[in-house]
Amino acid sequence: MRPTPRPDPGRRRVLAAGGGLALGASALLAGCGADGKDGGGDDRFRAAFTAGGSQETLDPHVAPNFVDQVRAKTLYDTLGTYADDMSVRKRLAESWESDPSGTRWRIRVRKAEFHDGKPVTAKDVLYSYRRAADPDTGSPSQELLSAIDFDASRADARRSVVFVLKAPNFEFPTVFAGPGTEIIPDGTTDFREPVGSGPFTYVSFTPGGTARYRRWTGHWDGAPHIAELEIVPANEESARLHALLSGQVHYAADMAGSSVERLRKDGSTRLLTAKRATAQQLLLRTGREPFDDSRLVRAMQVGIDRQALVRVALAGHGEVGNDLFGMGLRGYPHDLKPRDRDVGEARKLVKEAGADGLEITVETSSVDAAWEPAADLMARQLRDIGLKLTARTRASSTYFSEIKTKGVAAFNTTSTLPISDFLQQRVRGGAARNQTQYASKRFDALLARARTTRDEQDRLTLLARAQKIARDESGLLVWAFSDANDAIGPSVHGMRAAPPNSHDWARFDRVRLG
Image 1 (cartoon, rainbow, N blue to C red):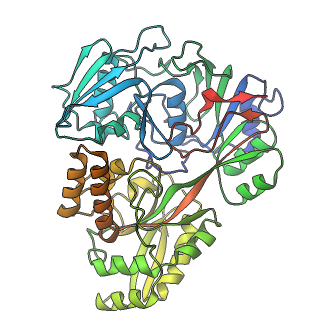
Image 2: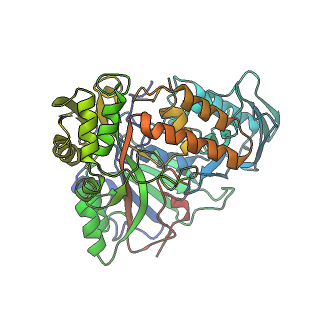
Image 3: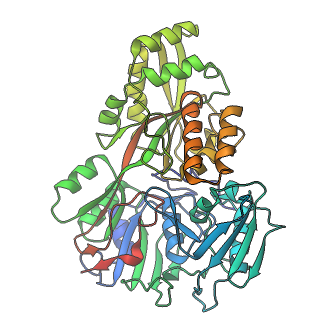
């Protein structure tokens, strides 16, 4: 059965879906089994995440939410993995290289085995990518994988696969680490008792409930230090906080606001804070009135007070954005001046557009705790330039599906991804996830040139030029970057702060207890 469409895979906070109920602390305690302090026995590690409800699956190619991605990296491996700056490092791939045109890529697969003892082969890689490229599967990386000509691609040796692309692309290796690109055994269609090549083997799983795993001693990168892993559902932040402080879990994902302050004061736990992990965005739909008028896009950009938004909406846990995704990541243009507030300029632009007193509705939700206070503060700020902003709060369970077609402005978040992939999937004209409806032949041409340029530095220069155009025109108003905060208990060692989607984020196979 095809799963229910899920929220944006890039966002930090996820929801209960498909009728799943948020678990309180008492339910979490019952689900874990209170068999010891600080998470239980010395060899059993427990991590609390927001669950995705009864429609959850262990199919790694359907991994829209962070808890899905954690389960996927537990059971499976990918060809590559992201460093903190979203550059790609080798994982199951021992090497990769392209021909001079950038259309043929040969990947050499390292010696590795699946949990059933069968070797990981080129045929498994080819099958996995073909399946994830199928739109009916629902992989977050489907659009990037659709660039492969599967009829021309082949496994040319037991551990060597050649991918032929429909067009040159020297940024192609970024897909090797993408969510929803895990390598599964050739022909796999049933994931009720999944077999992968990851560091843990499957024990049990209840959709919307607990997932249990056991250490696999045959993993190519070494066996995990812990014997057992449990990923438990706790949809309310307060439940995750209580479970950590009371010793029921070792790891609590996605802490914010007052929880962060409480954990900072607590002497036993430790916060893992990844700075600038999530881009806080206001999507202005340039394909519809009134934002088809570039003067109003510009007025919104210079009419808001970003410092105040960070201070109030993010409680200071972040920094101002500059209307571009990916600050600090590979390929971000760092020579840009900050976008400061200029009330006079904004008022002038509003009047020139004949929009003085214009009423604008912005879509928001409780999906992210920052959105509603940000909407309230923006409304007060934009009154100073002659615009009347009103928030329309939509249900969390349907928010992301509704804003694809409804409204002219909407809040959104996206966590760390390679900049080139973000631009290709969400800013390029006609891209399925381009929600601002931005279309620029100049931008698209630069993006295409970048992807077809072999030299790394030249490619990054072209990407920077494309981003500077999109910054002024695309309707993607990045008002801030918020921090990502996870927390660990006193007995946990071997974990560090890392951006979501990166290799070291939620890397439980390297955890030590004691």
